[in-house]
Image (tube, rainbow, N blue to C red; front, side, top):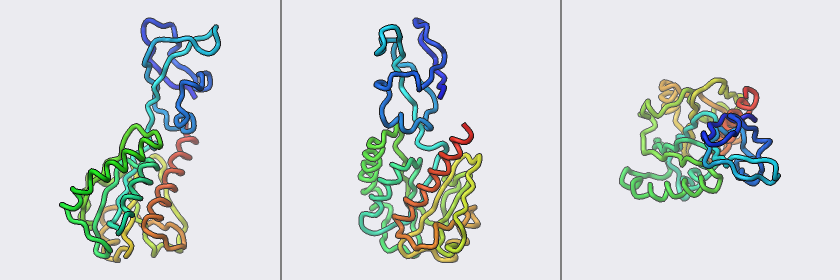
Length: 239
């Protein structure tokens, strides 16, 4: 892995360094296990002695991106602590935005005032999850939007809606050269056919998550995991 750097004028360090040649003690474990997310290296201090007395190295700060492209999760209101759980896991899985939506079959109801009261807690959950997995950016949490009127500025380059009626179809996600991705997960009561048609009109493509009917929180984690895997697989192939 060759990472471009801009060294200070006071050092004769090379203009590029290989991660393989750097002392492992200066690289956090989380970054070593997710090197595919490295965007660039920033020099933070002058050269200092390395473990070998005849070598020197530069202390580096890695700028890490959660996923190769921004991923947005649209998640319908769910009962209990499911929203908390999904925010935590979606943050760990690298999403850029989490957008709460309301639909006609929601088991629980959450109005704008309730959302504003819960938002600090949601932010804390996302922050702690991001710190746990060494993310540098905390995902945005937005809401609450009606499923029939999602703002166009929140939509991605390619948008998917998980729909159980597609259960007999293979999981088909094409993320080649996409600039951003979104996934919409309905509530415990599912989506009505009218809501699916409305989403289709907004540009959402129906997506199968397999033949099993999943709980709403499971569907979110499963769908994001598939998207994350495909994005990182595509990145490795094209690096």
